[in-house]
Image (cartoon, rainbow, N blue to C red; front, side):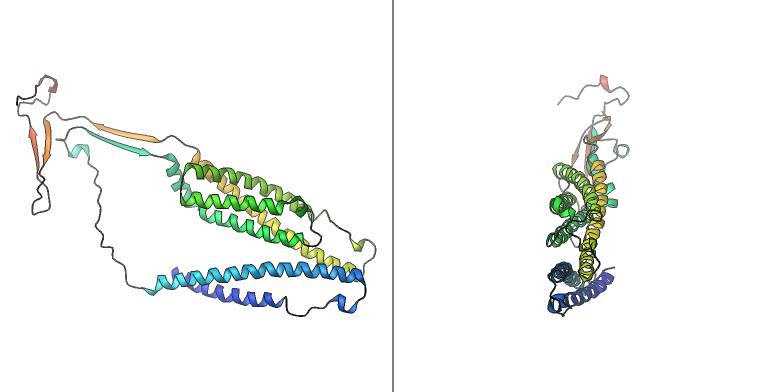
Length: 332
């Protein structure tokens, strides 16, 4: 698995570098410009809007390609370090063995009380966390917030759609990032404060994502701004339609990520409810009745050559095990 991950990350780094170069060419390669050949002001203005929106999308993809390249390089270096040493590592630290004494195997000892405290919150976290993986889902929430913020900024430039006027691309992305950060923190350190905070923010994130889905869907219905195609279909209308396609494309991407955010937030909310549903610990106590035939036990502090310890039991020879209440302690 480590070698497979190493190989795929090397391929990913190469592809990300290639994508970075190709996306950079979008800003350098000459494109046909209406403003060079046409004197129509509306044609030139529409083309500039279309070009600005196109450059915004290319810039966002350029940044994410660079980020992917850096991450792939770091993971490749980690994979190389993990696979460079083939010899197994032997742990020479002393072993610590925990032996639980059983009452039936130690009839000469006195009272033995075995107390076990089980916290249901920790047990629920271990059981549910193996399936949910809150840290991974929290990272997905953070990336959803960053992508929503970046593409929302692109939509803000030149005739923003209806969803941008509501501000959901800004305050929604902030809620996503906060919810993801608390989820990652709760996955690293399970405390009641972090778990409850993550649960509350994920509920808020689910509500925000549901509102964002509704508002982004309205971008395909409510057209903000003047539509030149209402009068006649010409080159100005063609450029405007291309600009509108770019806008609808970004709104569609944000719509998909909002649905993803809603799904992740709902899953994490259910996970948080399962972790915090039980607050009282369960205490299990096992008590073994004493054997009055044994007064006490003494352990030899000097260890023998065999590595074992001699145990001397001092008993009362006059003790009656069947009726211990009538016996009196020996005089000293």
